[in-house]
Length: 350
Image (tube, rainbow, N blue to C red; front, side, top):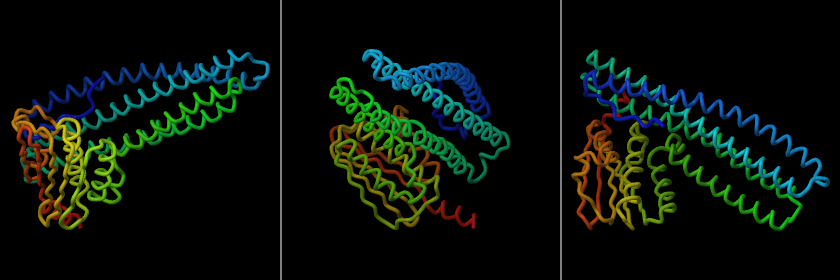
């Protein structure tokens, strides 16, 4: 499966670097296009099979009194298996189509940067900021699309599946207690999965980031993260709460996600403190944990891609990035981004 997460754009590299990346993306596009064609054929076959099995199940349901118990159970099991296979295959096809669209957008973005390099546009003042904005916006557009797709696809399908189990419970009048117990367990599992998908949607793209802004989203995310991980996570906000440019709010929120995720996955921490200072000219974010700590040199050596990307994006925006970590004594990661650049951008738009 081709990787769909784009590499950091080689904004300061020459045309050969970008051309090599373009060729890699084109190869990935060919591969994913072939897989889409094969998956579409399989979906068509499964759709026909599902229709035939569903028709047979309908006949069985219309003749429950005359149909042997074993045949009823087999018809129900076949229908459920066919639905699940089709559901999984459609999900795979949608994922491949998503990968294809993502790669196509990344290819177009690379071509645009290549043309800018040829024209000397990346060397102009503000070129770095424009590049960061393009990267973040391209990635977030894909996350938004995936979020809507998850809501309208698997989430809705699971909701319908819960209703189907309730209907099936009424049909299974042979050994009703056992049938009810099994189907009730299935319904509980489906409802649990449905909640997980809702959480996944929030992870992909919290809609409140667009509607309410950075600070309310951080508060909501920290509470959800605390509940999901069991860590003692506290967030404090200082300074003047206000909206920032969308791409800057996204950059800060994604960086905070990465830092909290690192604390939960790697640090063995029990307490995490988040502080966001909305200063007049600078936004400062720090994440403190009481975990096992690590050697900050791993960022310099490129072994922590997430931290490296936070550093690069903060510094490209004119900010700073610092790690204070000692083995066995926890970690503090701090980054800042200037907001005067954003305010000037706002003034040029009005």
